[in-house]
Length: 286
Image (cartoon, rainbow, N blue to C red; front, side):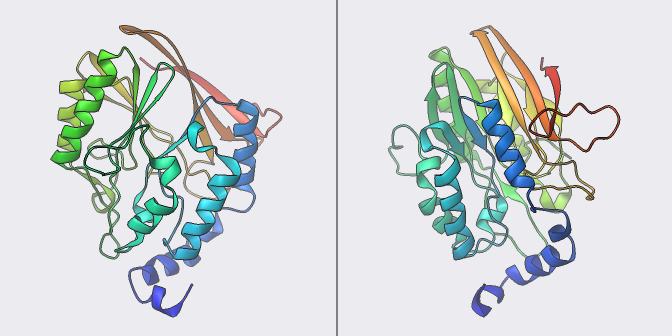
């Protein structure tokens, strides 16, 4: 990292990284998660942001190479997180570098990336962005009325096509799900969007917690699922790294979701380790 890059909000993030997060993140944890993903063999992978820490040019390029190595763009949908937009200008560089994993199936008429729309079989993936540069010690996200309106139209389109609608977003769109300085501004816009247009599932990141909330949708409660950091190793305060695995079956009006939360095993009582060193907890979301 250059001195010029440190002369910004990055200096606080750099200090925080060395004092706290560096102790428990990375190592070989991410490689173990990737091995678990390969064994699970999902049809599609959703990544809900924060591919980088300080959003330097070197990090953004390294993340692009990592995506190219492990994730085919047509089988992976990405939305950015607040760390991907850590300082002004970083988000534009990141979205340009990672565009194959961000793009909609067809370009939007206004040329913007978000909300994105991808159809994979009976599934519609609608990607929203809450990523924006913030002041030091802040990690808030923004979901405005304009994006809510555009995403609502995509939800209607997918619903009319009889698709299972998955909304991807980085910040949790649930009140009090994150501390005030890490919250999503525009929670009300998101809630109104779900009530008016509906969805079947919402996936988010940001909190590094294995969470399950529900929001009111047009046709009933919509599960909102969070996930631990994919780089969280043992010894930290947050849950160990993992990924959510969903099996979706049924048809419009009668969808069924089976959820397996895959997490790195520690050998502690109550955990069953599989060959990839992961444990599985199966739930039916309703």
